[in-house]
Length: 432
Image 1 (cartoon, rainbow, N blue to C red):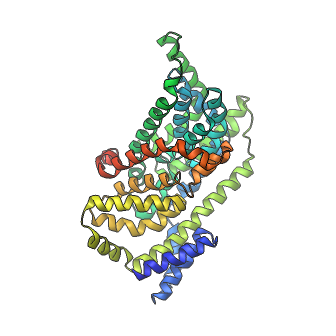
Image 2: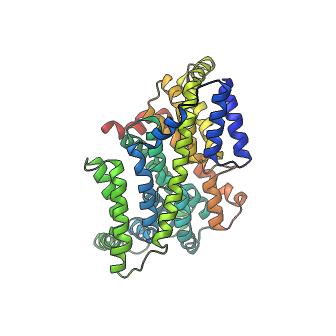
Image 3: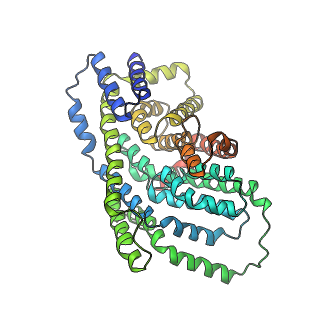
């Protein structure tokens, strides 16, 4: 265990002095290998192999496609569609916010982009409906990561690449937790604000209701077709997840630069070159993480850290229940301080073998890991999603935190179900 302690000490020290996470990970790994008197000549080959993976191409493709669709005003279209379905409910504005975050996040693949895009649009709408700004900011901050649990998900791709698991199964294992969490958020919103609102006095006419949905669907069809094409193409066996990324880019270009201008909705706010630049920088950042994570993985393998950690854990407890509890605490703490993709690449090679020794399926572990790390993104002290939400709402974090408590409770309930009822997360993956 001395090697793990040495690695973590150097990694945390470098991170604290603001060395970029990928470099901190790589430097700490190499120095640990040197200290352990291991052969470091294999590192260049590991670095090359880490990027020589067909699945890797899906990451820059989905990032670029998400940026394209976000720049075309897709959030407004999705909100209109969601409002047509649940607009009559009391607390409809909050429920629309939850559903819009789920759909928008699934397309962009970024929780921070979801909070920024949906927050800027929905906060004024929520205030008009009488929602307290602090509560509205908490709601949007909590909903930001819901779309990450609905595929296509960049963290899901990274986990599949790191672990060698089937990408479609990794994507599917977080759908049911994501949907349940979204439903619980809607219930919380109804209890908090929905009950205070007056019932819609206008009589319900099914014909008018269905006609309204039809109109909203037609006006939002361009936006809604992207996830439909991706889902049907991948799960229908038409193309691979990597090829789906290329299709998504093509569709984004078709919508943003041909269909919308023809419909006189104007060109996207961001210029094409700026979108390409943003997507390239984000992709390069993840590539650097992947490269140095490969170095860390080589170090972990050579120093037999997973084997030693497994033996240590078995000495502490042989109970799967206790192990999963310790695992949840560890991953949430990590999620508080580290970005999700970095956490997956750093801890995955260490924890997956340990989890498997306790008979935890790697796909089930994916749902546990991703959910924990995303919950960590809304949990102080770091809480990147909450921090961005407060920036959008122009509030201090301590003003918003009390309103986050119900959402933490809901997230904890879903986390416990996901952890201790494997069939809940594994239902959809087992259908493949």
